[in-house]
Image (cartoon, rainbow, N blue to C red; front, side, top):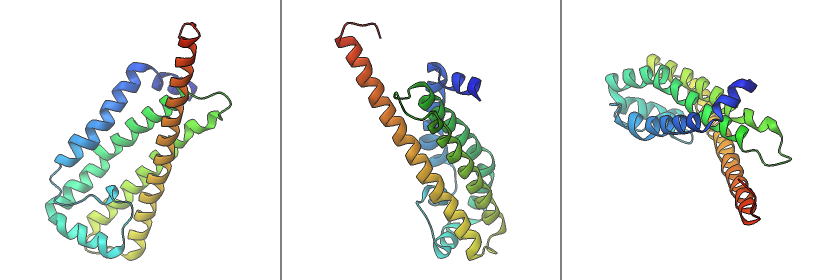
Length: 175
C-alpha cells in the first residue's frame, strides 16, 4: 500500500488522475445517451423517483447506463481514489493521522457497491423493489458523504501546504 500511495502521490500521476476524473465526470458521462439524470448523480432518491428515472431512460438508455456502471463507472472510482489518496498522502499537515488517506478508498468501495446495485435495478426493471432502491440510494448517499469528506480534507491539506510553502519562501528558505 505504501508503494501505491507513493506512486499515486507523484505529480504526473496526480495530474493524470485528476484529468481522468474530470474528463469522465464532465465529458464522458454527460455524453452517454441515457436520456435522463443519472441516479448515482442524485443526492438520494425514493422508489418512485428511481422508477420514474428508469422509465425516462427507455430500454436503450437503461442498457447504456447498466453497461457504463460496470465499465466506465468502475474506472471513475479508480482515478478519483488514486488522486485523492495520493494527494492526501503527499500533503499531510503535521500531526494529522495518516489513516485519513484511506477515506478515498472507502468512498471508492461504496461507489462500486452502488454500481452493482444500480446495475441490478437497471437490468431487472420494471421488477425493482423498494428495498433494492433504498439500498442503492443508501450507497449513493454514503459514497457522496465519504467522498465529500475526502475532498474537503484534500482542500484543507492543499491550503496548509500552500501556507507552509509561502511561509518558507517569506523566510528565505528553499521550497
